[in-house]
Length: 479
Length: 85
Image 1 (tube, each protein chain N blue to C red):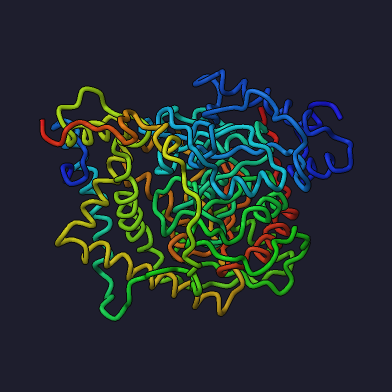
Image 2: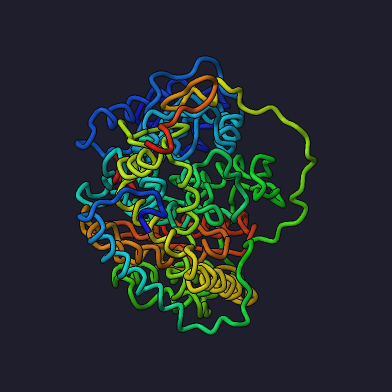
């Protein structure tokens, strides 16, 4: 195989080629390593997808079934002896003494760590403009954002700088960048994947998931991610093996379209693409019907209480004592804490810590945190009710296509509104996948499909059938 | 609030942050429209049972590895500035 052909293979195809002996794992690793290293070396002149790139292929053969297929991993995951900073200055120089469980699972299945990917600091952001490593550019248009917070992972996969990547999703951080970069992104059921070693942002919402070129790769990666882990008490045994998707039709599948998430606030071009995908779904045999998620319009409010509240608590550990950055020449202990956190955290992280501290403070707890947890109960109920009538709920993934760098940085609320269609599923803990639905103004539009908890196999099958019918061409993004 | 959050924010940083957070809090206040008096708060989104495990000792990080990433160490512990200057 020549180098170009090698880079065209999906991760699953590459694993099969290695298994059959038609491709050497080393050849595949080197082809990607060279491209990733070039992007890293180009800094702000490149896409800036990576925070670290392996200097050479590991010695020895990787095990089957993945046989050494290279994996890019979001900087949020701890990787033993490999810099892991969560995109933050406060973890400058941090070399974790252990590896995140999900990364270990994937490497035990034969994936090989090739690079760490850029991200919004501590996964807080929707544009990858909040990183100590600088902004990531969208490979479809370098003046635009790749989405976030898993922006480096999404841009790397879309640009063909990595065969696939691991990301995390708290309120849309896998699905939204996947949509904006024209690739597939899956947020699994809450608890399906261990969070041990995944640097915490909002623990009741955080979940790891795949960013891939196609739905089959998302299934393949997920198969080697799920399972109970004694190091994460919220992790669950997945009730069945994750299958590779095979469906070509959607006969008898009922798709629910919530008017609350498909109307006001969604760009016309995005809605046009969404409607076109619904027509394709009907041609494949699906029934499309309206559903109601009456509390979904309040999801963003609840999310922007709960996530900052949990973040303010989780990020209390960054105090300059045990790891990472410490402000020099402190007068006393308190001065060391406050200046370390001032210098080490970026503006968005500070904003969320302040918001969360406020929401949890005495006298405000019931009005904010308590109320948001009740809204969350209603949102989860809305989904349960809807799923008694339909198999899946479908929406656009993001209200807009990729926006310009700097366009929303001055207005945090405008940035938060990007998560409008992804946050409700996060609050309900249910799985949701974004697949490329088409283009609007030459930029990718994501189509989101959500199902009940643990419906990943059916969800992947449905997404696979739709993906075949859509026939999205992501070639324009390859570098 | 900045003191509670252990963040040293200057006056120049506080003003824009107060403005931005007010806009976000105004949006959040829309939750007030809902009658939630009979609704229990969410404790966990996915039904979990049997999360208990046997309470057995397991190896943990050796002290020298736990200390290896610290900005300052002394006598087998983390070294910090005095609480009172």
